[in-house]
Image 1 (cartoon, rainbow, N blue to C red):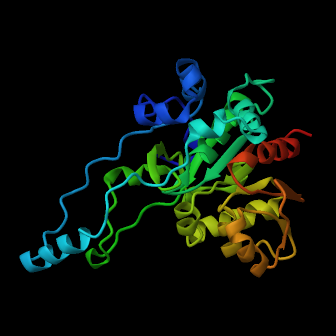
Image 2 (cartoon, helix red, strand yellow):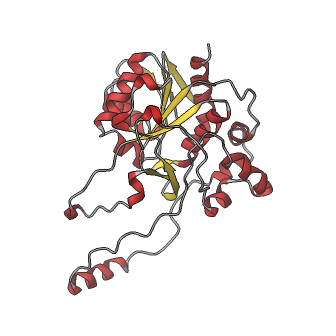
Image 3 (cartoon, rainbow, N blue to C red):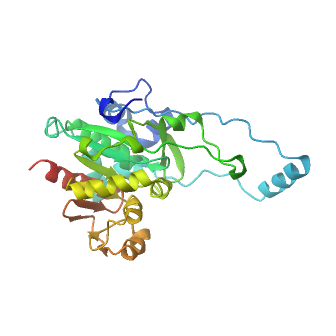
Length: 302
């Protein structure tokens, strides 16, 4: 992969898998919106189907029988998910706003020319929050990097299994449903504040819950805020800021579930779509993505 400075974005040869295309786009105009959402210059999108995992350790027959009995209590069903199609096509004011944000032609394709933005995340990042930001920013001229921590080795006793793809990609999700894989442009331990003009920490519960424990992610967000550059988070992404200890005395917002976490970290919590406190920019959930990006752009283009 090389150093972060040497990585450039380009369209990956693999597109989003068909299941995402069917779910993510309004049924009334699927073909057109597929090309508008997915054929994005200067993005390394590498959505793939989840690979087959290695065969798990086979327990002893008695243990195996016990596991089967336990599993019998569970009823197979689709997992809870966020329908991107409904987000952008439902008849609501916020839905229409998000649709315009995602699909309107760029007003100025060179607005952010020369700007480089880090989207910091790991496995479990919320799909619409990362791909929506990537699409809008790149269409307006910015270079966007997916910056993620390295996945380490885990002792077999923990039972954790990670497919080989996690060494080079992060898994995006729709609430609890796997969406696909995004290629990593830069590892978190190689990311330098001097290389970026702004950063975004998207949500998805699993993503920031893991990322907040990464010392390199904590240091990066601390240094970004101290540098005066736009430092953004949306939904649960503020968890990383909580663990980094940068919210004390700041005004901020987040998804409602973690408002107490922000308050406990010393922030003044506001239930507003987007809260700007200096170069700290926070937003609540996917519908607020347009406002967060707008606040970021206003600080980049002065």
